[in-house]
Image 1 (tube, rainbow, N blue to C red):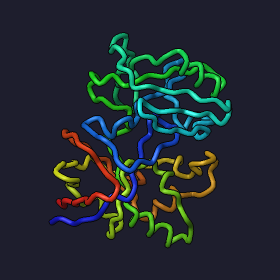
Image 2: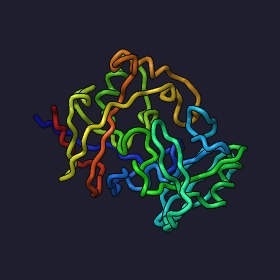
Image 3: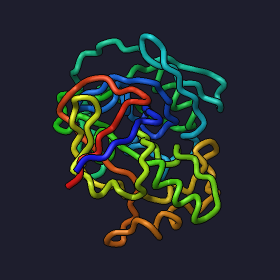
Length: 258
């Protein structure tokens, strides 16, 4: 059985944990959308900086440039640009992300200094070495899809407006069937098949306003009444593909059911 809907929004997150960029179209391959999770930040002990353990990750603005992207720090009132130069994939460092290790290429000194000044502590940046075993700085899979229909049901139940950016999706669809994602084998966009990996387990970070970083709504509890499984609260669907192509806002999405 197949159902159809469309892509309403596309987001990329060039630096893991920092604000995203909404795009109208984007190249993709098995690693995800182009530039998504291109860079990762670690502390002096090698621990990954996330919104769970580091304040100030919302205090940035990112913009695309023809040859890369720009990062502006509202704390420093300064910016740094990352260019898409091809750095030699040598001297890679193993970076622990959840239950796996990815390979990162040490970033340039000027970016490390910029991030260290922003966070007021030693910070190192790494770019993805695509010779890694999993090849991605994502949490569980390269693409995260969210349904507007699912979010609308939550908003209506609790009489609130919830910014979908709290959930850091890559693909937002205008589905008409709420909480349907767990019934899919995958989706098809154009001629490319994306396979369902698993539903996304959520944490208290969704309670934070994506603009300020302050906890202002108990969104996690709101989701719980709809999507709890084995004491884990789920919202959104992780996807993967072995193909490449271009994804566009407004493009039709075919839902492929089990």
